[in-house]
Length: 351
Image 1 (cartoon, rainbow, N blue to C red):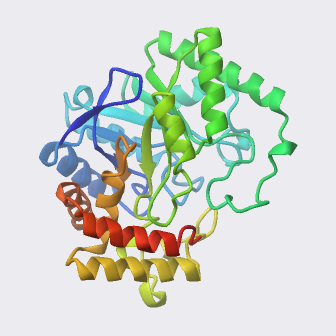
Image 2: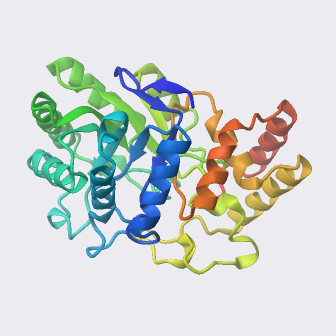
C-alpha cells in the first residue's frame, strides 16, 4: 500500500488507516487482535487511530479499553510498535466520567498523554490529536443553519486556551512523549488559529485534521479540505461509510443485532433520516448498474477523492475489514464518478 506524508511532518502513513473505536464494545480483545494482525501483517497498513474515550458508544465502563487492547497487542508482538504510526486523541468537552467533562484545557494535556501511554504500553505517541473543540462546533450533525451560534463564543478566551494547549503540547513533544499533533472535528477557523498561534509563538504545528466525510456527509468540501491543503495538514476522513449506513445494512428499516444503529449513541442515530435512506437507495442503484459492491464503491470514492491523505476505516468483523481494504484497489471509471455525482446533486445534505 502506498505511503504518503502526514501533512508538514516527516511521517509516512499508509493511505488507509485502521480505526479502532468498536474494540471494547462491539469487539472483544481477541477480535481486535485478529484485525490488527490482518491489517498490519497481511495488508501493509502502518497507521492505527484510537482515542482515550474509546470504546464507542462511549461509557464509563468501556473508556480506555481500546487503548488497552492495542497496548496488549504490542506486548504480544515485540518490535511491531516501531513499525507503526500510532495516533490517539484527548477527549473534548462534555464526557462527565473523563476529568468531569472539562474538555480541552492545558492542565488536562499531560495527564491525558501519560494515561494513554500507560494503556498503550508505549513510550511515545506518533500523532496526538484534539478530539473536538470546547466551543460549539458544526459536527455530529450540528451543521444545519442555527444549530450553533458562533457569536456566543468568547473568542479571546478560546484563543488563550488554544495557545496554552499548544504550549503543553510543545512540552510533551520536547519530552519525547509525542512526535506530532493534530486536530479532529475542527473547522477552517480553528485550523487557521492553531496554525497562526503556532507560527507566532514557535509552537508545534498541527499536521493533520480528521473529520467525518462520506457520500452522505460532504460538508468538508470545499472549505475544510481547501484549508487542510493550504495549511499543509493531512486530511483524514473518518466514517467514510457514514457509520455503516453506506453498506446498505439498514435498508428497509433493518437494524441488525449488534450493529451501530442497534446501540444507544451519545449523539443519537442522527444519520437515520428519510433523505439518508433515499440517498443510499440511489447509490445502491449506481453500484448495481456498474456491478459494484455498494460498500466498496462508496469507500473507493473517498479513498480517491482529491485532497484525502489517509482514510480511517473501522470494522466489526474480519469479513468487513477485508471488503473495506479490497476497495482500495478499485478504480472508479469516469462513468461511475458521473453517476455518483448525479446522486450527490440530488442529495447533497441528507442528514
